[in-house]
Image (cartoon, rainbow, N blue to C red; front, side, top):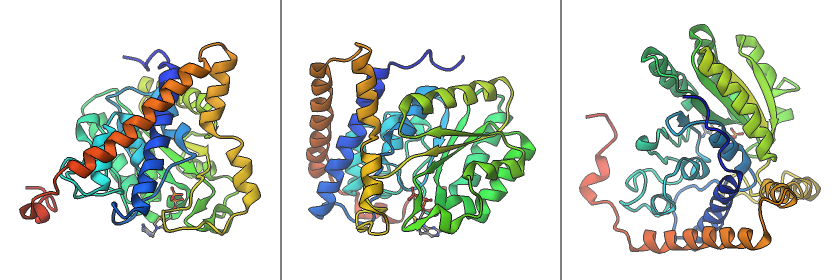
Length: 321
Ligand SMILES: Cc1ncc(C[n+]2csc(CCOP(=O)(O)OP(=O)(O)O)c2C)c(N)n1
């Protein structure tokens, strides 16, 4: 089976809208103290994961860091299961035990949600090794932030992936900052993508504010990997409109910078492209947006009505049985 014959772009726009509206609701519920722990929003970065979904199959593997709400929603985990997880309810995608940073949906091949920076990169290599061993033609999508590329685990994993020619795509979501530290201050390279060269892994760059560019670049990379198993590295340049987490006022960046990226909103851009091409009317967009808002709101009601996990479950799932 090859890559899907271009998933419908209007559907992909609807998915980006669902992610945006879900997270706006999550932000509101966090401020109302309905959600405990950390909460990192993906708002502004939607075209990255949705572009990747558009370039891959539902049975490809996916793993990411803690900014993971969008990755689960993009994979098809319901808004209800995602919101309930934030609320710590048993109906959540990790039975309420994981919270914002530990979404998991094995049935949809979504292997988390990982809080330790860089720690899931070797897990991605392991998933890809298992997949290659079983002779599958599935790729593993491994998402991480620019902060992960200076971690030891990242380098060990890239080396092994290079040596073993594993079918894994390392996707660096370069949003310019690791918490409040800019890439220029933390990384000796001028371009993150050049990290790949040290491991003889082909590297690519894509504009993460442009859904079509992300999809097309990844489609090309995925096709090549399915033909002939090997790793690849894609630096996707993007921006988060909110702070690192809900408790970050993001005072380390300028208003001008934020404004520049806001004007390049990935949702607005795809909407404008589709409208210009006569594929989407304003009325259709409004219906889609209302649906996204209604789904997000309904997920709050669902989460509120759901039960907390039973107390006996507190120590379960720490170790494999
Ligand atoms: C090993 C480790 N060190 C420090 C932290 C604290 N920490 C949490 S997020 C973060 C920054 C990561 O930034 P980046 O990888 O660029 O991801 P982004 O938040 O931009 O998506 C740090 C240092 C951590 N979670 N794990």
